Image (cartoon, rainbow, N blue to C red; front, side):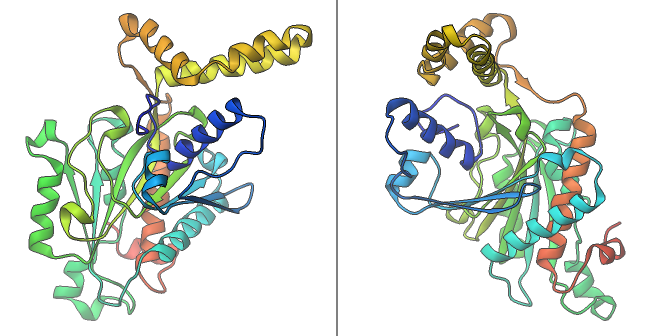
Length: 334
């Protein structure tokens, strides 16, 4: 969740949007970027890329995210079975990864698939692990059979506390102490505040990750501070908080009413401009006795998780190994 806020989201881009929305409601003047937050837009209509950089403690406080880089790829049509778009998304993800990580020829990478493989919306991490090129053992035992440019990559899906009885962070720390990787890449399912971002948005962060934080179930942080190794986090929103979705739905209804009844538009605008946090708290209070703290996911989540896990896995495969293409991946993936 955003620091000091009640809206559930793991996405830096959404934290930034909330700040802008609050500024727009509070003033008619031009909206400025928060101090210590830099934003850069790139890409196109098919793959929109937003790079948010938090550069100071003031930026940390305003956006509720640690200092570092947060790159978001928004691909609205990723849900569709479009092979060309799939390949372009893999390549775009790989390019963004290469731009924020420093890799030597002998860099050892540990990929950690966070989440519960028994719960579909939370199975993204383990599914990615099953599709990445695991090569550390090949380079160790049969190096002559490995293509030039392939780096040592190992991977693990450590499960969750409820299955193993061990904090995920403790498992990862034990592996790090033994394997001594130069870089950790952690993949996890995230929470969003907008339904349209579920399974269509990929966030890369170089600040590590706190598993489960988006749904209020925060565990031990995986970061350079806790593990002594740089940690890149890759996440995709797979769930939305029901109260957040209801709040956004009310705003959409009010937008429609403003267009349909111009004579009453001021009344509807007044309702829409109510403090978002107050509206959210009221909706959550009303819903709580009936549905509790409900988290919502699409009905076709099985297919969506499968598709986006392949995108992330192949983006990693291209980024981590020199000269590897999508056509080469099947040689290394079981």
